[in-house]
Image (cartoon, rainbow, N blue to C red):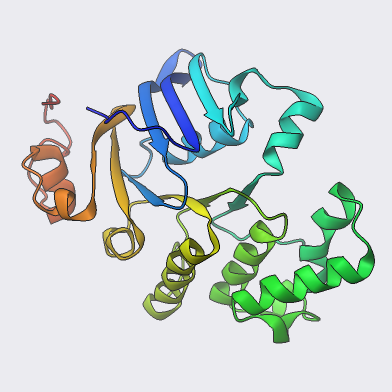
Length: 260
């Protein structure tokens, strides 16, 4: 059962499906200012779908998604774009534009969505690249960077608009353990910059490293949430199997699981 928390992001009774197949159902979740919330779950459980709904890229069948005191589910056009500018998104693939250099990738949203002067844009780009340790890569094309470097640039780009909330979709996906650990350190460091982070992942080592709070998504709803220490001592059999990596249990194929 989800705890009642007032937060920067409030998702309430959210339902969504494709072609009559439910993906999320009665999902409630909140993210408080300045915390790092890790949403755990098996592959294909709807974690990335949740991010798309929060961004307004998908519309829920029912429920509300309140961010910065507005219901994203009800917004369209310019109103939705205005709210999106207060969010940053870090994609699994980094999603950089391959034909322009790193600096131009970061400058693009500032040039298109604000009235900032070029010197202001340059200052912000340099500041965010320095924050992720990538200032020397400003003139390089994305293809010249390693996967971990591209992911760090993706984080810098997500920060250029000064978002209140940054969403991460499997931030360590495809990276070696050292590169993934560096990304985790960056996410932890964002708390010092008054940034709220929501990270969806199935990587437990990463989740326990970065999270101030955790929630597990199962069968379309939040099964359990709490601090990392509370998760470590959870008695829920589904959570326990997921954390222990046990091949036998309610998550395994053919097992009829019921939520406690």
